[in-house]
Image (cartoon, rainbow, N blue to C red; front, side, top):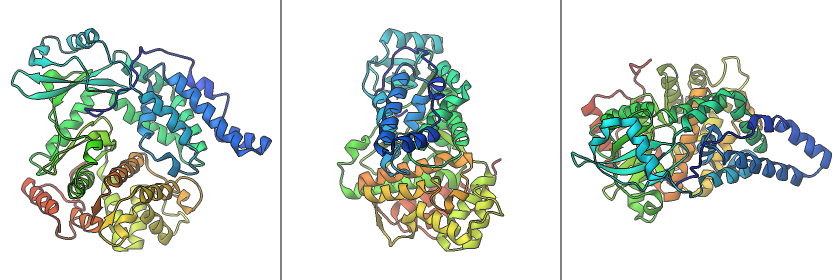
Length: 470
């Protein structure tokens, strides 16, 4: 949850009719196929999905359970560009869950603070009762410590963690929802693997101690960085349900879009280097690339927020994945296929040829193969999303690949980044940036030169080095 996100409904945690029970009366794709066959009316199929989406939203509005988090995770996807575009009614319905609503009453806020921190509340010299942000798990307040540092305090809603754990205990709940949404989009995907990975990330988001550890991992990684800003956790004012961190100032995404183009290009390059650096200098994927999770500053620096959805890649998958992308860029077709097998995307005996696999991979990241520099546009981003969705829709040999669970949110992070860059209308030399981040060429931009001087000073491993990581 970003420090300045838009509020969503608070409400009391209420258990309603089990969603899996509701969904059990329909079976996603099979029901839809039967409906189309009986009526011969594609409009009937659309109306079915609209009614189903509305019903889910009605039930979801009564609790802050796992499906609300799933809806937020999927909210950055351009629904019109995925598969047949049929996911759109689900996205629209779930978006209503993010409408403005009253925050927790100050009395309840202070009760949670007292229960969680006890005498540690003395660390706050000032505390603003009016939240600056709220989302499905908790809300955020400004505060000042007695040492005069400005901080933000994330406070979890009472009962939300248990509500989500209850939902996760019912494994069919998320599976059923995803089955409807995927069927609506005309896609084919391993829904249970997707659901398991989504559930793992969601369960981590209600664990504020886990998020504190992730913030610390990123702040340690980017210590002293010239243009990437990460908040610092205040451990003595944090607990299971309270997370206090230093405040990062800056423009939000909407305001940043009004800036001069040169500055927007700089910000876009900073974000690109953050995304690339996470996996190339460490084994991390920041999977929540929502525009609300960035803070943009006039000096070109960018602050990064919300570390509740992080993937930690095993080195046995990180290295072959980065090396495979490098092989595509270099045109080493056979090497690319072997590395994709090593990373777990397909089996060695798969009938998918090396040439077809390379072509499909290029479609997922076309910018690096285009004439440079590249200007990001909404239309190009939508085309990229459509091509990426072909990896799952059964319309090509791409269906012969399998996305390992560890990489399921990597695509989401990349598509979210493309959307932000398109919103800025940013122009970047993508190929040169990839080349220097992979360590195969010297940087040509000022940001690149600053970044590499920092890498050398810190002694960090490079993209194609083998990291000392499990």
